[in-house]
Amino acid sequence: MSIRSTALRGTAVFGTVAAGSLVFGGVAAAAPADTVVNTPCSFSQIVAATYEISPEEGAALASSPLSSSFAAFLAAPTWQRQIFLSSQPAVVDRVNAFFGGPGSGFARTVFATCEQF
Image (tube, rainbow, N blue to C red; front, top):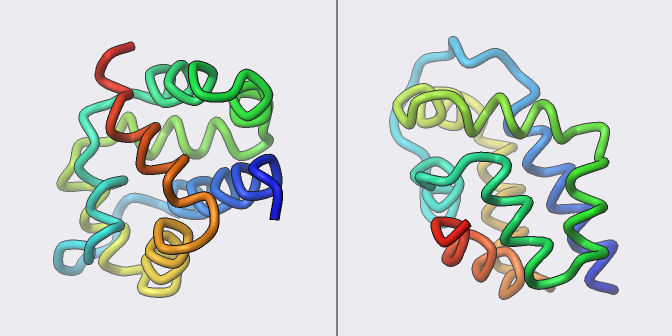
């Protein structure tokens, strides 16, 4: 699987995470989905970190139809992200699978470095 398709799949996962309403109840999300929930980074920081690693991937993320959903998810307070994800076990499973699969190093690097942007 290419990095581009992995990043696009990641964008889809993140968009799915953010696409629903942030009003569901539940308990905290499971790791590694915690990385997405607890990131202090904004969408623009995530995009900038992605551009730094791969300009092509950064452009794909920035222009994704799901980018506004992911941006809204990241703009929500951490507790709302936790509530949303805890009510969406299938989404948590997809995020965890993404972070454990091909391209996971790319995603982990983006989240580990995004505060620098």
